[in-house]
Length: 102
Length: 170
Image (cartoon, rainbow over all chains, first blue to last red; front, side):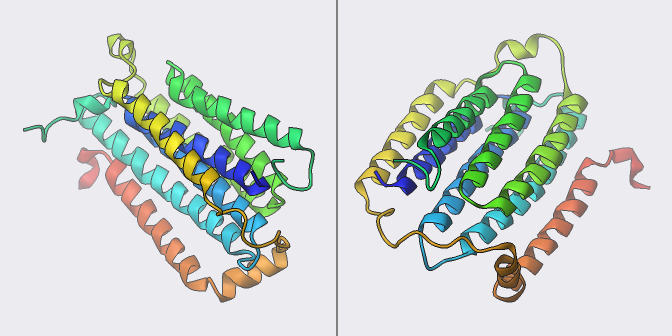
């Protein structure tokens, strides 16, 4: 395996840990935190690829910065939704938000 | 050997640090422990960026993730903390299926990664300095830059509108 492969493997494992958190946890705040883990994994892959591949000098690093900015926006809106839901239903557990269940 | 122009053990330590803290985020029973574990995971990712010679991203990671996002998450936890019986079941019911799905996704991606030649093309690139990065950001990528600022404005307004109490409308 080449040097880049090890970094991408780290990104894959962190991404899947985050995916497990999104799928498995009940607390919606923890779902948002697991989403952040997944975005971090993508950022590791972007920066590592930018480091080990020529031709795209700077683009990978810049897009990692864009991803960080969008993650900040996402966590703000996501947690605002969680708090608005908590104000209505006094819970943050995902399986209590079942009004649209048929 | 993993990594770049540093000792491979640095990569092993940083990778183990990130993965253990990441597992802590999804497996801790108390959500405050998960949040603290998340902060350490973000610090480890910043260390990974430093190993990859991306100092700017490492600094921004510490500023935005460790500084800002963690504080927002901790605020949300403290605003919504509920005591009592609800936390006995801290995974939801489909977590029995979630674990095999996550492991299978990891296995498939790893096999794809090892079998493909994605990493073998091209040679090691010279990492651009801060000057070159800012030149790129404000010339070639100025449109995404402006778009991101619009997204941030929209997120700010949206968060205020969503989190405001119902009675405060008038």
